[in-house]
Length: 361
Image 1 (spheres, one colour):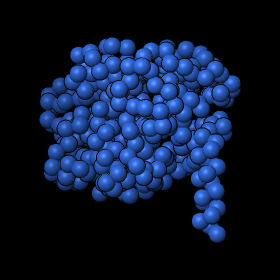
Image 2: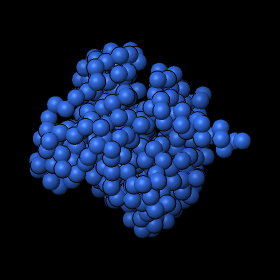
Image 3: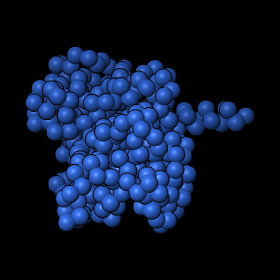
């Protein structure tokens, strides 16, 4: 089969690899229908995620069809259309039993595209399948559903839940990329008084309005002053950092009110300064974390019910075999306007293209 293989910082290639097989009785093999490129994949290529061995197939998000199951798999069978979560959960350890799958101590956690071969391939082996794969509700488009493998659970769990968003809050989301937009959309479920989106790209800032931001400000236009004006000098109740740079993290700590919450979602490749000389008396709660994806079934149900926006997030669609071109587009988002790039298997891509041509006529 073909897959995108990591060969070390700055190097990857679409090439032939062996098809995956069942290695553990709890595994399933999934034929990939749709996968995506994540900002974390770019961090891996930049060398910011140490420990990813050369030869690893990249990717950790997918929708596809189960083609084979291990003998201990109880909830899935061949032919099922499923969402492959970015986190694998053993289901037995202390952390998994409390829903903290990202901290799994039974052999799970963030495995796909990091410790084992991932989803940017024609087929993928998924370990601990009963706890790491979700059935896709009928009628959902794959490019919508795949956003619930990582993007939506991350924005919701690491942003909104870690930030303890409550009714009446002022919430500031710094970064209007896919995860930041998911944080905006899911924060609205808690009836905050206002949501402020901060972003350096005018195009992405415009998208924040479609996802529910009440106020939008360019990072270059003094967002700290805007937040101070909107809150009569008090500061935001919750700030959500969804970029992953020292500057944006430090901005979030300055914009939050005394007693407020800072939720760091962004994956950082460099150290950020924690200015305790200014923050020690503010009684802040600062949360970080890896997504658990335990919310994925609930969020998928809300998607099926039409309660969450998705389509504006996927700005570019490529055939899976064009993944190297897709990486170039995604990495140059400032020029291309890319938010989320979907990669579809050959049969799915051609069927969708044929449908579009039919509709056009």
